[in-house]
Amino acid sequence: MFNWLTKKLTRKITLVLLIMLAALSVGVYFYTELPHEFPAEYVLFALGGLIIIFLLILHQYISRPLSVLTKQMKYLLTGKLYKKIYTNRIDEIGIIAQFFNEVTENLESISKRLKDAQRMASELEIASSIQQTILPHESPNIPGLEVVAKTRPAVEIGGDNFDFINRKNNTFIYLGDVTGHGAPSALVMMMANTLLNTYSEMYDNLYDIVVNTNRQLKPRIKSAMFMTMVILKWDQNTEKLTYLGAGHEYILVYRVATGVIESIKTGGIALGMVPDNSKLVKEQPIDLEKGDMVILYTDGITEAKNDAGEMFGIDRFKETLIKYAAVYGPEGVAHHTSLDFSQFVGEAEQLDDISLIVMKYTGKEIDAGSAANAQTKTTQWLENINEN
Amino acid sequence: MSPVTPPKVNIVINPPDAEHNYQTVSLEGEIDRDTLPSLREDLEVFLASFQGTNLVFDFQDLLFINSEGIGYLSDIHNRFELLNKHVFIINTSARIMDIFQLVGLNQIIPCVNSIDELLAKIKIK
Image 1: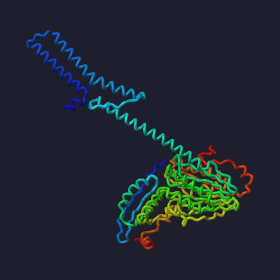
Image 2: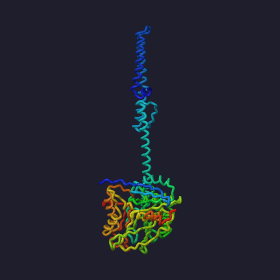
Image 3: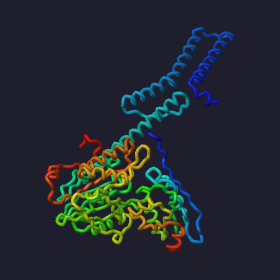
Image 4: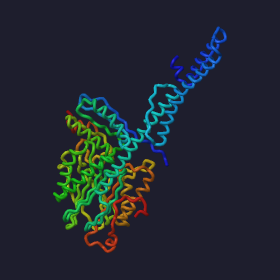
């Protein structure tokens, strides 16, 4: 009964009015029916008093709480410091106060999340710029080889990584792909890059570089993470190319004499999968004729799907490479392949990092045409012909 | 633009083979970025209750597995090794076997064609 009365303002006002009306009726009854000696003005005073009491009750229970509410709402809307409204009331004013408190709590929570998101975005931007400083911005000039690399992470930072490391007469070229993408992959990628650079200063063979890198990497990464990699060593003196696979995709070799692509299984085991990979990896040669091209890639290319859910696939990738390798040099092959790839994928979301390295064995005595084309080549993945 | 059917993965847990001391779990469908979280969640419940020594993954109806899925299998293998338990893979399609060979997973988890071949080639204790 009490709750029924207190839930609605109108009921409360009606109750007060009824009580006052009852008091007035009793007063009138006593004044008209019973003998009395006080003048009629007293009744008027009493009536005035009742009206004042009624107005005071209205002010105390309605106007003042509403004023407090509107004041805090104004503060909220004008960006000033507002306060929570504490009340035990369960009527309309109590509901509005509760609503105000919940709205402000939600706003504070959203504001905090926005700030957190801004902070994370800012940190990601920093991480991305650190990663960008590690990845080569331009394809290098390597005596005997014309090299072009293109990469694009799926999000701000990625797990695909590559580098061109010059040590005396050797150039080490590696392409790695850490499981997944984003910040965890980027951290692993940066560790791997540091280790490969460090060990390439200590050893001049791929086997020792990779075995030691794996030994250091394994205890530092999560059990479910690993990095597939293929690393090449180009001996500038002998013009011999060797490779060592760590569970990566095929090495594709375009043979200029036959116009076909040979797929070489890289073998080995991904870095970080076992504590000791020394019995599982092996450095092996790739015999090249002048004009042959070596293509390295990550599975972000072959496993990319279009809107219909169809994969780009290794066969389509090889066909595309053959089509352009017959006509263009590495830059043209990389560029036109990336265009065909983008056309195939269309508007579908890029789910994985994509990287492509195309190398051509030119020999030290490169022809005049190639020399003229020896300009800076960005490693950014290009989307359309106008970007080149 | 045609609609894309969301990839799905199913786990079928077969009863343990007490005679040969192994239990087979079939993974069906596609293991990729979308399906891996739910697969991991469901499989971890089973792995936590797994009392046997030898776990055999049957990939007869597995259509696709990405590198993160392979990483998860490698993780299960690593955890099992610490407990002196073993993981095996059977019935892998040529395409998926190719991926396993590329990454080198087959060098740490034995992959064979059938359960009979597994029992014949590898001594399960």
